Image (tube, rainbow over all chains, first blue to last red; front, side, top):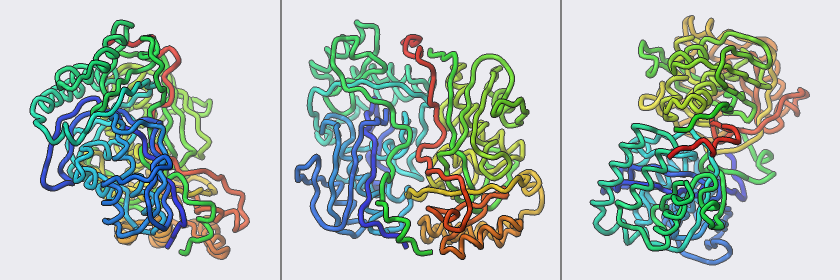
Length: 287
Length: 287
């Protein structure tokens, strides 16, 4: 048995470029199909015994995190840090849920596999209505394609094998709960078409084209987002909208070339993972 | 269309701790069940247009690499570099196959998804008889558990969410082809039992215990390997044998504490990935 007094997990941010919603009464089967980008800008979650949850130093309530801890049957103190804006389409709630699951499993010796922890976090996120597909994508890393909704063994993931710098500008929040709880028919029809196009030509350029098209057809563009996308196109690039947030992203120097001062980061190839279990870890092992 | 003149992929080395063999006439379904460690010591594969294959500067023939290129329908010049010993249980042939697939896909604009490239490399490795489970594990990274043999959608992977330094000492080669082409009944019975034990308690400590037990029961221990495992145990650690090679591995300082001078590396969390497509990549994009 190995019990760490403290553990830290890192989970990448995740921008969804397009999706179709697939609700299901069984949360492990519920989810979305679509594709996105896992970002090296992410969330670090540190868990110790105790209680309380703080995000960037402020006490907050995050439903999926509470659910994860309850399902693991542990009381934990959680400190999370992220450079990502909240409610802006970066999957921060999913990252908090998965990071909490990974770090708490290490601290409290819960003996869960990665797939079990992913399912735990995914189901907590779906139940809270804060997301449908971020957790499984954040667990995989890279440029994940959600071919079938849900977690393993139901969910089926693939990915585009590419690397590229990503630029993004966030203009503000958009409520995932509000969009997902409304009529998603138009949005899901557009998402299914975008996925077909991507699977016919699975490249990062087609991902951007599919995402760009979806941004228009989903009917979610705000004025600031629309203007940024058009300015990037005028400068010869392609940009799209992070689903769901008032955030625009582009490859390479797309936003810089259009006169914005974007955040810049790489794609995170690894996905959610434990990154630190303390220096005394080895001394505690018993075989 | 994006065409890189040169691309480099990194694929982690992979030590299998225990396994059961599951041959199948359909190579995508053939494979192994078991568990192992993906290592930050791995293989870098650089692909350009041209011909010829060199590993650490020497011209060699590697069947799975040839098969991958033939299946992609491209002619490529390949330069591979690795600090890992060959034929010693680190999955170098699998890494070469997967690395070639990832890098060649980027250079020649083959428009394959990650899963398609993993299947290509896995099938090439199985057909050559050089491995059964390394490729899928190397693609996932971390501490992969192969719950069901083969590639997606047949193969089912899970993982142990842990990090730890790994030490290893390689005493020499052991022919994977010879072992796998012989009677694997005893070995597979032991491997199935080891996997049951691990799934009942999916921790890195149980992985080491399962691997240690398998090393004895599989009947493959050489004198040098047996002695090293026993010396680590005498020093209070647990070591096991890399399948298939005359290599001993341990967690933390297990081999150092037993008086060896091991190689030391971390677990690679990301798995096989493209790491470089050249600085002019962005300029070549056409949307």
